[in-house]
Image (cartoon, rainbow, N blue to C red; front, side, top):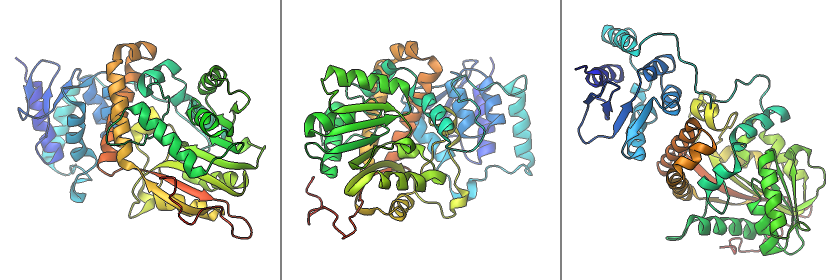
Length: 428
């Protein structure tokens, strides 16, 4: 009987410089590794070719999306073990094995022999098309948004649940996902100080949940803009069903093309991650210019820790290829600085990192409960992309590798009037 798993485990130990903290089940039925460790299933040797051509996250992700790699048991446990190999190694180990080491060269030759016929396999079709030209032009942004959001509204219904809110919820000690999303939308409205008749611009309005909540619960007149035609159609249907067409307008429009300000308030919930560092000052200045003096901005945005050398920052290859093309995360301090440079006065920052881990785990449960339907609505590869990225992101928030913050800022009047009460956290 072949012993592919034993050979892979031994070769991995040589290349990593440490024992593999996983159990491997190979395509020939063999198993090797610690008996109580999470099990990585290597269904096809093609996955090895992917790793040889693209070592690290992207190679692993391509094998996962193609169904060549799988997990037997708890996905979070497997990712937790892989985190130590890919993202949390000691600085001296981050460069990987040295090709000057004869044992390493021999291990790579053996792995290549096990991998089978070359050349590199084509990426799974769910990978975004290769993009060219300057980042964050209107056309390129529209293509990136379409890749992520235009995969079918019914698929998102299965993942997000009835709330149809695709951003971090705001949890109590107990409660459902829907209740937590309602709490988040209401928190945003309270922070913005919305009142009857106020004009609210919801940038990146998604499927219309924030716009509907602000109009229904606070009497606001809302304009929602999105680059996704599928989202806009879904939102308009919800607006009509709730009888709020006189209060809510939804447009397929780039926020840079909004010309009907000034507004009393702007909400940007989970949209600024798509803007990119090169365009962030333009984003901040555009929103500043769309507000009345005294108008408030609620910017709800995922953040990453700062690098010791920011020039060393690299966008996650898997996320860029399969999830959010051209998406980019910035440290909280950089975001606050850009808002202030645009003229905003930042009045409050609230970190809700742990809330996003809870939200993502709820979305993963929804996806797993509706797995067969989700696969039929999209494709096996697309569903696997979502399961992997949401589970890995949940661990990222739990381990403080990712954060999410609500930044409340105001366009202060020329006389310095911010319109805020003396005790600014009255919304709590």
